[in-house]
Image (cartoon, rainbow, N blue to C red):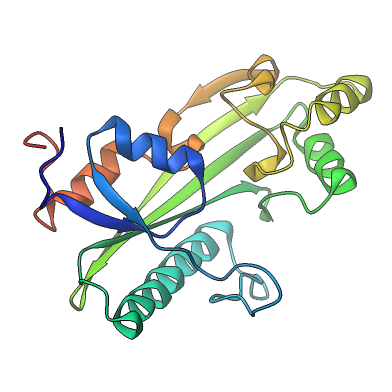
Length: 208
C-alpha cells in the first residue's frame, strides 16, 4: 500500500503507464492534457527538420512536462511532482508514433519487417522549478513479416493505439526475434529509470 504522501500527478492517457505505476506502488492522480480537437493541443508534436528520434522524444516529453506544470498552477491544484513520459519508435532516422489510420499502420509494420529498430521512452519528472529526465532505449528486431500476416494483425485492431503500430505484450510478440533493453520501457514507462527519478523527488518506492 502506497503512503498518502507518495503521491504524484501522471500526465498521460495511457492505461499501460497507469498499470506500471500501480505495479511499483505509486499513488497518482491523472492530469489530462489537451491532445485533440476541438481545443488545440497543449504541445505541438510535429518533428523539427532533421531532428533525430532521440532529440525529438526528449524535447516532446520536456515540453509536455512544462505544459502540465503550468496547467497545475493555473488550476490552483496542490503542487506535487508531475510525471510525463513519451514513447516513439526510431528507425533509420525516421520517427514512428501511433499510426494515424490502418494504411499508416501497414506502412510502419512493412518498414519494420525484417529490420532492427529502437523504442525510445523519455521520462520527465518536475516539481517546484526542479526538472529531471531520463531516456530509455530498447532494441527490437522483427523477423520478416508477410503482407498476409500484417493484414491479419491489422484486423485484430491491436496496433491502432500503439507506438510503432504494434504491442509487444500482444500478438506482435510472435514477430520479435531479438530484444534488448527495458521491457517496461517498450510498454511506455521504464520502471528502473522512473523509480530513480521519483526518488530524487522524495518518492521512495521501497518504502511505499
